[in-house]
Amino acid sequence: MDAESAVTTCYRHSKVESHVRCVRCDRYICPDCMREAAVGHQCVECVKEGARSVRQARTAFGGRINAVPVVTYVLIGLNILAYLGELVRPAVVDSLGMLGRGLAGTDGGHYLWQYPHGSDVHAEGLVGGEWYRLLTGTFLHLPATEGTFGILHIVMNMTALWSTGRVVEAQLGRARYLALYLLSALGGSVLVLLIAPDALTVGASGAIFGLGAAYYVMARRLGYDMSGVNRYMAGLLLWLVISAGLTSWQAHLGGLLAGGVVTLAYAYAPRGDRRTLVQAGVCVALLVLLMALSWAKVSELSGGAA
Image (cartoon, rainbow, N blue to C red; front, side, top):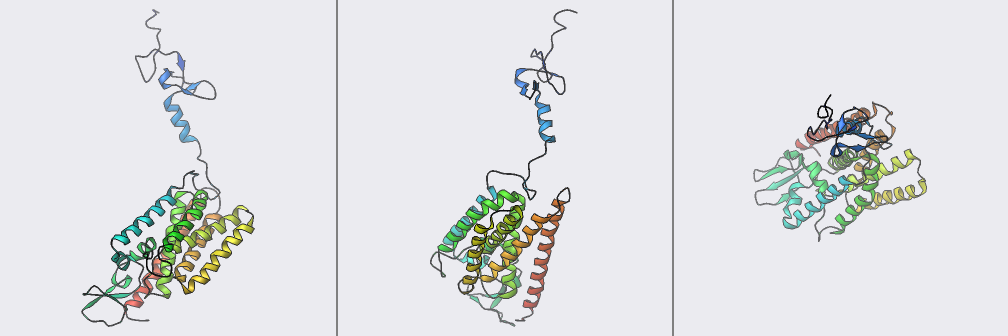
């Protein structure tokens, strides 16, 4: 055998001479293709294959571990963008806020519901087919100079979202956390629809109360020292009582209940391959229930019933 035929080359770079083999596939690899391993070197493809076969670390509730609370950042950003939109165009509140039933006039005015109504007005809100209000209203807040709180409305909500959301997202993972937030927001809107369909409401408070419920359930499931957690929940419930005379307590209570149901499913679903299926199933079932309640109530309201 001559010297030329004995030369070995990298399997990825045929013109590069190589004398090192991958410890997994035994192919020759050049310095550019070498990756440090516990023993010897591996090729690029074997490293990728190994990474795919390694089981991803999960939280106690089945979510992927993420160091950066991206979803919380995005939700805060969306709320702030919506608020800036309100400042530029205040009519956004009337057109996107949560409203079960109302009347919009040809003069641009908004009026309380009555049935039957004249031809110079038309139905608005969910009875007018504006189902998007169930969620869009949860990203809006009181204008800076209106209501009891004004600009403090969004400041307090975003502060609560920042402090509680990061903790909950870290434990649940991004997908479960987002589902929790949206279902809590929806739960708040649905309870507003059921109890106070004539009230125009805005705010992320329902979703934030849902996060509060999640924090409590997770703390109990993980065996935290409950003294601090109980003080947090006492403050949240106290605000729920106080808010009955200041803001939409229906949205707060609806978000609290929906968030509690979702997190109980997250926390106590059986471990193993069925856990994600059970958790997703409860979320879907809650979504179906909330939408069924909304449809039934809107059907009732459309007929003019109180």
